[in-house]
Length: 113
Length: 112
Image 1 (cartoon, one colour):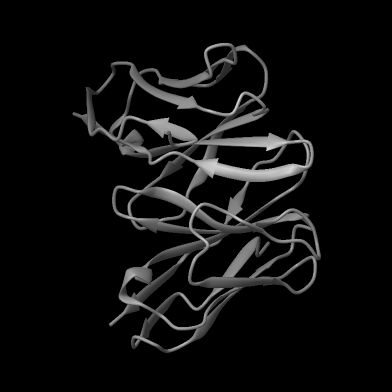
Image 2 (cartoon, chains in turn green, brown; image 1 turned 90 degrees about the horizontal axis):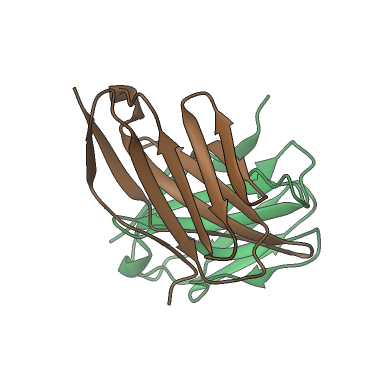
């Protein structure tokens, strides 16, 4: 079972470049999330999507855009990368309702130079 | 005020002792509460979930929830070196708001 798959695993960008982080889940979950994790900061929510066709801002949305392409896929785009966006990015998915265990992808380590 | 707060630690506990991890949350509408464990360089993995006031036990782990005090805790009995990790508290409002919010995590070290 694949679960939540993120690509790429590692990426180095130059300041000002753009890129899209891809995420797909095969568990038929309605909710999907993008988090960033920095040392000492825990997981900070960037954007989330409660269902196909809806997206909402989280705690740190500035500098990012998202697309919920379909129920399976939720992408995160950096239009003009900045060194402050150097981080580890996690995608997660969960079912709606009480039993909302979130399953995580393996993470993307992004460095912006 | 952060929505979910944890002591960042580090917390050091002797092997075999009880480790106690605490978490408070700000939104009284929160319905679901989770504890995740994250080893260095790895993804978070769920170890406990709790939805009702009181205690929930699973092996060496016990989650405790007090909605009136907006407080959730995790106890690890008979701590093992393999329990050394960062523990993340997460809170979800449910019922149409699927915003899953995490605390900053507590780094736990079990001393042999």
